[in-house]
Image (cartoon, rainbow, N blue to C red; front, side, top):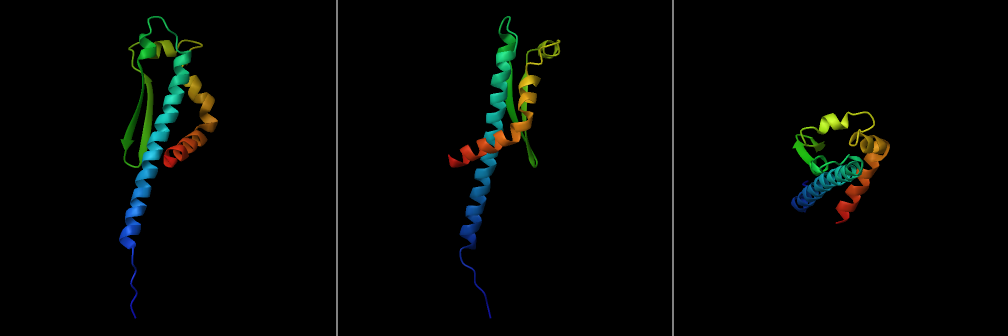
Length: 115
């Protein structure tokens, strides 16, 4: 008695395509949420010359089994300004969204997977 299974190669190909699509959607979702947080931060950042505000960056770093989103201001004095009492222009928008950030990433992933 023998058993033949047909279509495994096609199924494997479809599964791999689905995983790639999910992976890309996750990356895009993380970038979307990171950009959204940075936009909120740019509304709060103090502006004198505009250099600090224009130094805002959102980067995604791929590491084995995880992705990191890095939100930063690259102006040399960014940290000093951020740590002044009452400023926290990057920390505030992140903490304000802390309780809903996972849901926001999930919503963005669904949008990206739909295309």
